[in-house]
Amino acid sequence: MCSIIIMARKMLIDGKLGNPNGEEIHYDFDLFVIGAGSGGVRASRFSAQYGAKVGICELPFHPISSEVIGGVGGTCVIRGCVPKKILVYGASFGPELQDARSYGWELNERIDFDWKKLLQKKTEEIVRLTGIYKRLLANAGVKLFEGEGRVVGPNEVEVVQLDGTKISYSAKNILIATGSRAQRVAIPGQELAITSDEALSLEELPKRAVVFGAGYIAVEFASIWRGMGATVDLFFRKELPLRGFDDEMRAVVARNLEGRGIKLHPTTNLTELVRTENGIKVCTDHGEELMADVVLFATGRAPNTKRLNLEAVGVELDKIGAVKVDEYSRTNLPTVWAIGDVTNRMNLTPVALMEGSCFAKTVFGGEPTKPDHTNVPCAVFCIPPLSVVGLSEEQAIEQANGDILVFTSTFNAMKNTISGRQEKTFMKLVVDAETDKVLGASMCGPDAPEIMQGIAIALKCGATKAQFDSTVGIHPSAAEEFVTMRSITRRIAAGKPKTNL
Image (cartoon, rainbow, N blue to C red; front, side, top):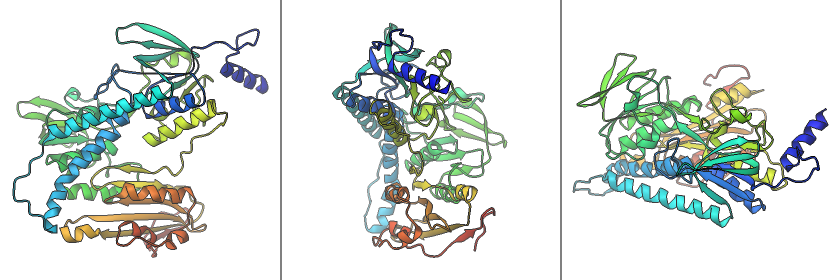
C-alpha cells in the first residue's frame, strides 16, 4: 500500500496522475509562486536557473500593505528590515552627536532633525530596491504578474488583476510565499492605533509615542522614536521585553532602553484608546491614563493566508493560519509548497531565502535539500542592538544531558569611557561542560550584529570553548572579549536551576 501511495505522489508531481496513458500533462508553468517577497523571489530565480518555466504574482506596490496592495520585494524590502534599519541609522545620530562633544567636537549651532527628508530618502531606497527585484526576476526569465493570487486547484492558480479580470494558470508546482501581516489588538479605539507599516511612513514625527508590545518591532521603534527626540512609553504584558530570548540578555536590553530615556511599563495591558483634542488618550488595566500623538501596536504578526483559498483546495493550516509543511517545505498536497513567514517556522528574511534555495534544489535541481534551522543568528536593532546565535541559557539547561557552563563579560565600551555614556556592553557564552562545545553566544552593545555574524560561523562549525580561547583577539575592540572570557560565571548541574558560583 505504501509503495502505491509513493508512486501516486510521484506521478502527481510529474503531471501524469489521472492521465490513462501516463503521458505528461502540459502546464502553463513548471512553477507558479504566489508572493514576490524575499523568499518567493529567491525560489523563483533559482528554479528558473535550473531550467523551470516560472510565473510569480504580487500585489501592486505601496509602502503600507493591505489585502490588495503590497509590492515586489515584500515586507523586508518595503515595510520591514530595510526601511527599519534606515530609521535606526537616522535615530542613532542624535545620541552620537551628544557623545561627540566629549571627543572635542564643538556643536555651537542648533541642530535640527528633518523627519520628512529622512522619510523621502527611505522611500527612494525602497523604490530603488523594488526595481532591482523586478529586474532580477526578468533577467532570470521569470514572468511577473501584478495582481492577487489564490490557489483554485492542486495545479491551478487564479490571478485577479488590477481591473478585476481573473485569469487562471496551470502549474506543475505551486509555491506559497505570502509572508505575514501586522495585527491589531482588539480593544475599544483600536482603529486609532497604527502598525509597523504606518510607523515607517508617518507624515509627522510624533512628540509623544506609546508602543504596545515587547518583540523586535516594539523595542526597535521605541529606540527609533526616542533617538529622534520623542518621549516614548513602552507597554508589555511580561516582566521583561523580548520573550524567547535569553533572560539575562532581556534584562540588559530593558536597562539600556530605560537608560536611553524610554519609560517601561511591564505587566501592563492597554484597555482602550480615545480620541481627544489633545491627542490619543491611552488607558491601561492598571488604571493609568496618558496622552500620545501616536500609538503603535507591535504585538505580533499573523501568516498571510486568509485570501489564498488554501483550505478549500485541501491544504492544511494550523490554528493560527500558518501553512503546515514537511521538512522539505511541502504541504499535504504534493504539488503545493510553502516557504517563509507564511509557514511560521522561523520568521527571518535570511531563513526565507534559505528555504527558497532549498526548495529550488529539491524540486528542480534534483538534489533534495532540507532547510537547516539550527544555529541561525539574528539581531534586534534596538539602540544599542542585541544579537544572538545558538541556544539561550534557558534552552541549553532544558536540553542538556550534562552540566552547562556560562561565561559572561560586562564592560564599559572604550568609546563610552570618553563620552561618559553610562551603558554597559554585555557578552555571554553558553558551553556544554562535557564536550566543551559552545552552544550559544549573545551580545548586547554597539556592533553586536556585525560581530555575531562571525561568531555564527564558529558555532556552525561546532567550535569549542578551547578554540575560542586559543584565538587571538583584535585589540582594542569589543569583539575580543569573546576570546578572552576565561572565568566561569556559573555552572548549572544537569536537571538543576542555575546558581551563581
